[in-house]
Picture 1: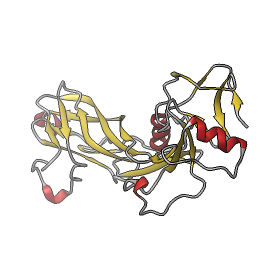
Picture 2: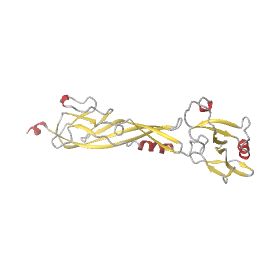
Picture 3: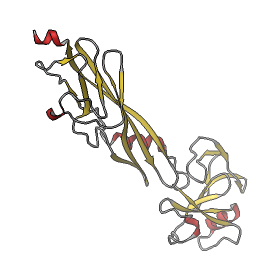
Picture 4: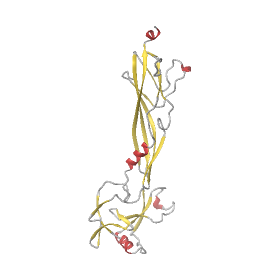
Length: 265
């Protein structure tokens, strides 16, 4: 039966993706403003409803998509006729089919859903690997190479990590990864590393790190080293709906650096 909506109804557009709260005037049927029939909801242009039996994947209405729904957009006359007699049919020109990412009338906050997908990954700060180490008996020397790296990088500390979130029949997936790590060395300088860095081994001696290193020019007791990981998460909803979310995680450690003549005394 037709639903009397009292004049206007807040309804997403027929694509189901606007959700902007815009008032859409519904047509009058027998002197009453009607926003909904059993076969569909007024979209601003037609009464739109999900098709009862989806056409096969080769149907042109899919337009190459393999998700979402096929919606039938019916004229007022057709929708009213179907509402009065479920055995009635639409005449040529009264009904068209199109693809939509979600069913008509679905109000989905895709960005909020994407945020939930990212949160499900459990992204956390890195554990800083550094030489000299943050231990009571470890002291670096001014002018000697300092190495920084990510201790045991994994999906939650460096990526890539995957997550998803679902609301009703809509699912958003996300993949996140670190794009750079910025180390604030505590001496007024920063070092940007575009890789996890290379873990130091004794066999490297006093060589410089090939991808993530620093040198202190004066004594520090101690220097606080802060590592900020910058993440980018690419998220994807139904069809062409998608975007990116940027986030960051920060942690710190300390290193002691002294003059060579002081250390050897």
